[in-house]
Amino acid sequence: DLTDNTLLDGFTITGGYADGSGSDRHGAGLFMTNSQKLVIQQVEFSRNRAVNGDGGAIFAIGSSNSSIKDVLFLRTSSFLIDRAFFQNNSSIDEDGGAIAIFGGISDGEHIVANSLFFENESKRGGAIYVARNAALEGSNLTFTKNEAPTNLGSAINARGQLTLFNSVLWDNSDESPLVIEQNERSKEVSYSIIEGGFTGTQILDLDPSFTNASDDDYTLALTSPAIDEGIASAFTVD
Image (cartoon, helix red, strand yellow):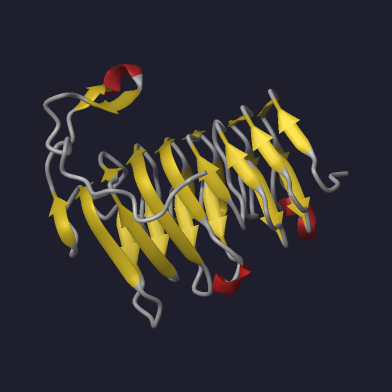
């Protein structure tokens, strides 16, 4: 059980498989409920699978004041995620291969920054799914080789509030890596490279020129059209 001020540091959690019923079908790597001040750092989550539930690696509900940094792959609810690496996790029959956000907009900030998502898979939102009553702020993110059915967002599917900038969505499973379902929630997408294009400020449909994609190095080469084309972060990560 997790209690207040719990620290998880230096673990590897891999090969989790959630195929039960009720709550047992969520969070193949880690299931959190009503956790306070949980800190996860330098933890690797890889090859975890929720067969018919949410959260291939982590399922979190009712959590607050959690800090998740320097993590290799993650899926959670109310959070700050910084410098994370999300690879080869899946929620095959549900939403968000890496992250699914269902918490209400009033539940607190949901921020993801400076992170890489690749080879994640789900039925809607191959890497990230944002539910209608939820919100996501994303900055300096790279999405590549993620998978979802055609026109359901191979990288991101957002029904709720979305702010996304300084990001790259390239070489995912179809030409609609970002799918936004229109509703009353605000959407702002800007200063990013998105394969197939997208309506927004300073959106480029150009090869981002990864340093060495064949060796899974998805940093930007000096010749990348994204260099010096972003904006200063509208929010900060402490």
